[in-house]
Image (cartoon, rainbow, N blue to C red; front, side, top):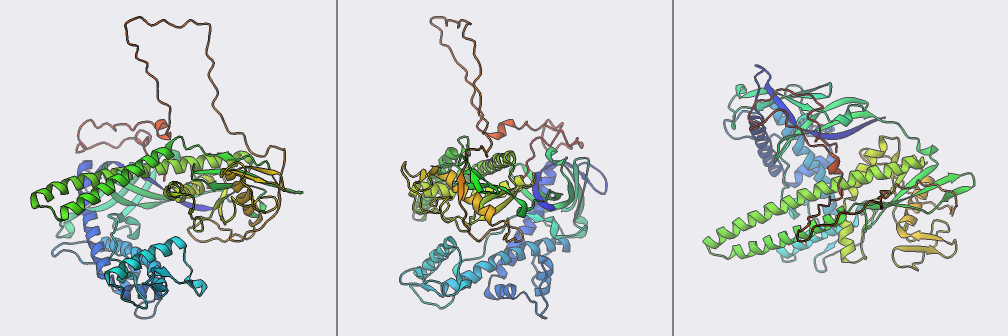
Length: 594
C-alpha cells in the first residue's frame, strides 16, 4: 500500500549548473530570498485583489466561464478563471514561477471557501441583540461547536462596529480581511523547466532556477543551480518508490527543504483484527492506552492500562505558555501606551514592543519543537505497546467531536493547548510502518460508561477513579476509557468510513460486554532497574576546611539528547566558503523526519 510522508533536510553544497563553479551557501540564501520575495509579494497581491464574494462563488460552483469543470491543479484553474498575478514594472518572472504563485493562491482561497459557506449559513441564524446563534434547521447547517463559537465572536465584533446593523447573510469578505500568506515556494506546482530532483546513494540533488538579481529584468538573470542535500539515514532502508519535489523555505539557519516521498507499507486487514488498543486523551498527561481482545466467548480485557510518561515536557510546555501569555499582555499594554505617548517616548516603546514580539516568537518556536518531540515520542511508545500485544488496530478519540469543557480553567486550558492533532498524525505515521491501522472512534461516554454493562460509572476515589458496582470492575479513569475505545474499534471494524487525507473513521457506537479476565493480555512496561552498589568499600572522608563540589549529571529528559551533533562538513569559517560535496552519512546526523 503506498503512503506519502514528509521529511526535512538542508543543502550542504551548491554549484552552478552551466559552469560547474561552486557557490557559497550564503549566496544561495540570498538568491532564494529574492525568489521567495517575488513569490510572496505576487501571491499577497493576487489574494487581496480576488478578495470579494464573486471569487468564492466561482470556486463553490467549480465551473469556469465556459461551463467546464475546474481542474484540481491550482495554476490550471487560475488560468481558466483569468486570475493572473502582477509584478513590479520591468521585472521578468518565468511562467513556471507564475504557476507556483497561482497554485498557492488558489489553494488558500479554496481552503477559505468552506469558511465562507459556513459564515453565510451562520450569519442567517445570528441574533445581534443577544450575540447567539439559533439552532440549525437542517443537517447541512451543522458545524463543529468550536467553529460556530469563533464565527459568533466575529459576527459580534462586526455588529459592534456597525452599531448592530442587521443583515440577512454575510460573507467572509464582510467579516475579515485577506489572510496573510506564507513565504514559500512549492516547486511541485511547476514542471522540469523550473526544478527537477534526482536521488542516488542517499544523496538528493535538486536543480532549481534562481534569480541572480533582486529585480531580474531578463531571462539571462535566471540561472540553474544544483543543490546537494543528504537523505536522513533512517530513510535508506525504507521501500521508497518515488521522491517528490520539495518546498523551499527560509529560516534563521538558511535554506530548508521540506520534502515528500512515497513508500510501500504493509496493508492491515481491519476485518480480521482480533486485538485492539484504545488511546484516551488526558489533561494530566498526553494519553493512556488499554487493550481489548476478542475471543470465541466474547471480548476480554485485564483492565490494566498503559499511561504515557511525558518526562516532564508537559510542565515545561505549561511554563512556556504562561511566559508567552505574559509577553503578549505586556506588549499589548505598551501598545496602548504608545498610542497616546509623545514621539520620543513612542519610539522607545516601539523598540521595547519589537523586543517583546521577538521573545514571544522564540517562545512559540520552542513550544512547537517540544510539541513535535512529544508527539513522535508518544507515537513510538504506543506503537511499541500495540506491537508487543499483537494488536493490528488502534482506536483514538475523534478530535472533531472532542471538546474539553467544564473541568476548570486550568484543566480546560491544558487540554486545549496539548498537541493532540499532531500526536494523532505522529501515531498514524509510526504505526503504519509496522502494519497497525489507526482509526477514529466516537468519544462520547468513553470515560463515563462501564465497558461491561454500559451503565454510568461511580467515582468512589475521586475524579480519576472509576468503579462499576454491578460488574465489579474499574480502576483508573483513563484506562477504563481506553477499554471502551478499543471495544468500539473492534465492534465497528466492518463499517469503516475512509476519506482521502484522513484516518479511517468509525461513526457507529455499538455495545458488547467486556469481561475482566485474569490472563495477562497487555505487555509489561519496561522499568529501570536499580544499579547495584558495593557497600563494603569505605567512603572517602572529605578533608576539613575544603568545600566539596559535587557534580551530579542531569537526567535525560529529552530524546534530543540521543541525537549526535552535526558535523562541520569541512567548513571552518563563513558559509561563503564554497564546500565540496560530502558523503550523505557524514552530514545527516541532525536531519529529522516530520
